[in-house]
Image 1 (cartoon, rainbow, N blue to C red):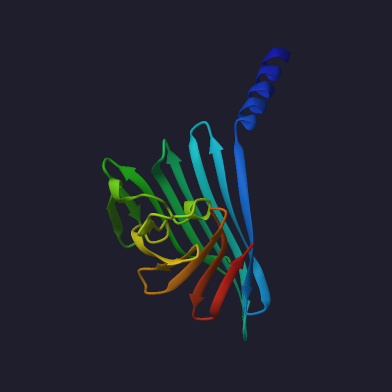
Image 2: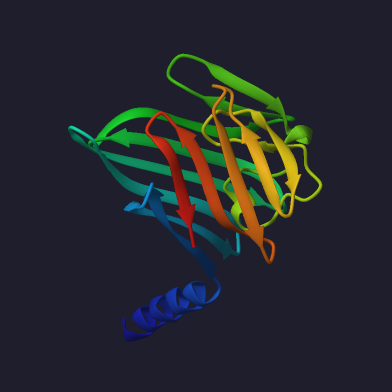
Length: 194
């Protein structure tokens, strides 16, 4: 019995030792007010690489609104295999989807529709773009929308992203990693800065 426990302990220690994680922590601002945080993580495991993003912000005008967004993108041998997205407002899910590889197609499932993109057209996800500047890309794959979205280089390591709903975001890089993400919203510009 003792050797079985030792084996399980040793196995868990080895598995933990084989996981390498990196995190980018951003403070979120609306104007001069800090309204929350976003943590984007890249984790290497024996099975592949997982990118996650967890955002927790609170916007207050007349009422206070807690907004939570979480994304994940799973890669095996450099190929996107699975994604998830969830948006909650005041702890109630408002939007969610998940995606997976189906043959030569990447399919993202929503409550009311399915988006499909040829797997060969998926170069980099938006979440992965926080860790690798998309220097030679014209599009990135959105875990939230299930489609490739426009990416335009503005020079000086700054990129403009246009979402399917017409909203724009801007990402600025230093040393190949995102330093600032600016989201143009109905509340004003929300800036995530590290």
